Image (cartoon, rainbow, N blue to C red; front, side, top):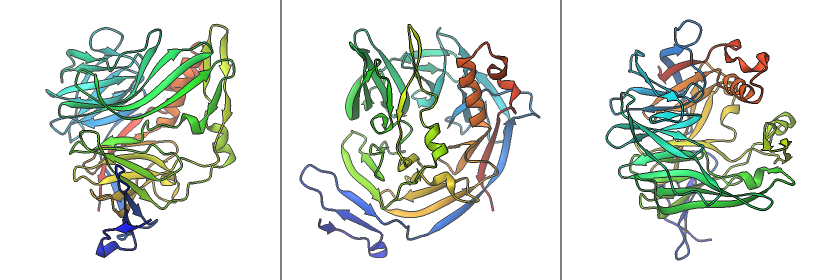
Length: 403
């Protein structure tokens, strides 16, 4: 392969592979970054929840900034959105559980919509519940059309101007089970698809339910959108490759990095897919599992306000003394540095949500709260598992880079 256009200061680090006509160029980066590893000691700005607060959180799954810089927290379990100012004062709580206007259930994501509205991604049936800042219902968005006899799911959404980017799935019944088409698409503000970016089809046979990890992989939680409207996604499980699309949906480049996937322990392999069951008229079916020996190359990503791409890989939470390590790429796709986030938390038990402005939301106790919520769904009559308050209460801590 012929290489073009090396950066003089990083000629051994990144190269641009010549692309065949109609193909996007590949930005090939070495395993190490020219600026090395930068350590950020994250310091507390404020905290909410926990034993000393009068508010009780269920399961916080997302955090976003509103137009005034306030932090919005989505509680999946309690179907509430909590809004805090920069000093940690709780300004309001909006949303409620239900199926009526402005109500939602089991929502996973927040999305900032035009006219300063808040969008709540309700996975099933797939739609975006729109709210005014005070919680007043606004017109909801129902992406696409479910196939006849089927239904749709939305995994996540982002908005840039007059466009939505949606990740979801359409499912239709088949003779043996269910056909599923997963997608990442650009849509208009009514949810109509204008450009398909990625898709993957799978046929689920209920006569032999199998969780095949390689076949199940898609970009859910492994895509993001930048402030300029560009879309970033990692569609290849076993290759460190981030696809970059223009705001119109053209594949502009593929960012690669030399990388060795992290091998799993046997305990980790035993956990993958262990909670999955299929509900049938005859009861639950435990799925057969075909699990891989290594973690996916890309774990998560976000783009900060300066247009830098931050990627957490499969090793990210496994470095001693580090909560999470990010690989940072410049707007041209060149690997610039790594950033180690040091925080008072446990990467296996707590969540960390990036706000994109140098601040992060630490969700302490997220794993236990999520497990308890799932157990509550499965065994609602079992007092040992259904009562979330038996565990330490969930706590949210806003962190920023300290000295």
